[in-house]
Length: 479
Image (cartoon, rainbow, N blue to C red; front, side):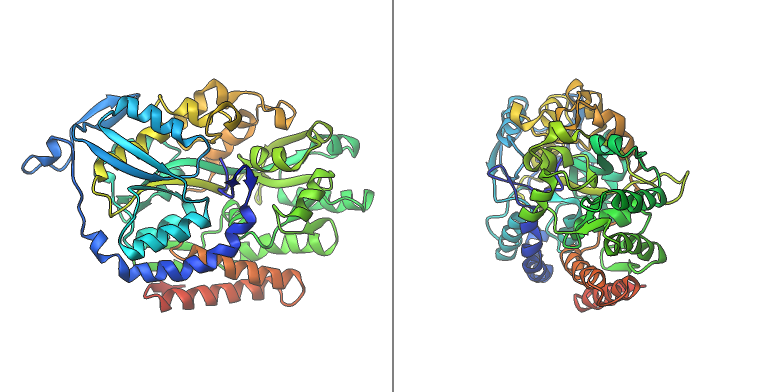
């Protein structure tokens, strides 16, 4: 669903994520040495076979289309999540597992929750059993020992999910969460504008660049698109889609390669378009951006599968006039089809949980069972979660395939985003320092777009600063 930017009383709060991320860097750094006690907690197992001498794999049974461990003991779990209508998920789960009770806590969305989670982990008390995290935060908490390896309970479910999503929850042979939703990227465009100016939907970035320049000459009062240099997560989505692999590694050993020629190429194209006035550099999800979106100032937008529900519906009040559609994202190399992800989340089991097996069962059930998926993909206004699911069984559901009124009744999930999900580069990894990395990238790309340095110089600075920071935190880093 969302780039988890997200929902706070129904109002998008993406821009708040950036302000809070820097405070999380320090908190998580502390937990690197502060979670030793939690790491030693093996928890309780409720499966009879797991308690048998020499047994390593719990016995399983089929529950709502999933092969899950049998669990007979009583357990009470605390779940931190901000998914819309999450209590309905709990209610469905408890019908199948009446012996496992789940207490839902909304500790805030995105960075607000991460700040609280880092605090309770550092304190060693008040830690939930299951916590909702974005993909880019997983390595940060895996590296601190805050999350539980649940591969012995749910490792057999790998085939239920889009392959690249399983990579996002795996590290060093372990599995630390269950993918929930994703944000494969696409091109959103105003069909009304494209028809008026006889524009073709661009299939390559070269074509995108040419059409942007031509369009701006025809209508200098409008922009072909916008670029947000204050949104590090979105910018990394662009790099992901371009085939850039900025981080590789696990545990304490990492390779950092941010300032690649391809990364320079990506940001240089956008910088040129901003310089020439064809694209506006503006912080997304801000009042100024909302005003321009509402007024139809952008012919296109680079967004994710959740962009229609979390950006267009709440911020563009002239959808009927603008007639937005979605299309496959332009490619850098014709024939070399690749996509990236912007947003997406995981239900992770914490190391401190006293019931890791029950927690793993819950995380798997709510994200991939045939009982939960219809709720997960249903729109929030209909009581659902509004997710673009990581579990591929969700792609077969009627509500997933339905025409989207926000996109002029286009069945965009089928036309675009199911295809894009299969094209997301599975080799892309996030680092344990996403908060720091986002802040540095935003600062330096902002300087480059302001003419204070070149894009190449900006990315070199980001590379150097991230390497130095990671080493200062005790990581072995190669370049």
